[in-house]
Image (cartoon, rainbow, N blue to C red; front, side, top):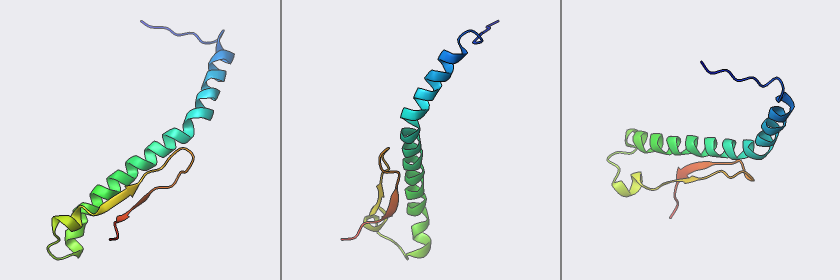
Length: 82
């Protein structure tokens, strides 16, 4: 059996969790937004044939994702314009 007792070290654990939250939350949110945008891009590729009659591979592969970063929490999914 494994037993972990943090009663004596509670202040230390709380300060470490506070540091992790301050530094990493924006990174985690940006990563989650980017993953969601990638999933949306795949969905867009799958549903395009419903709305465009016989799309060529060039059309299906012309989607793009603009990724989020910790400093800029914005993503964009769409079709490239030529």
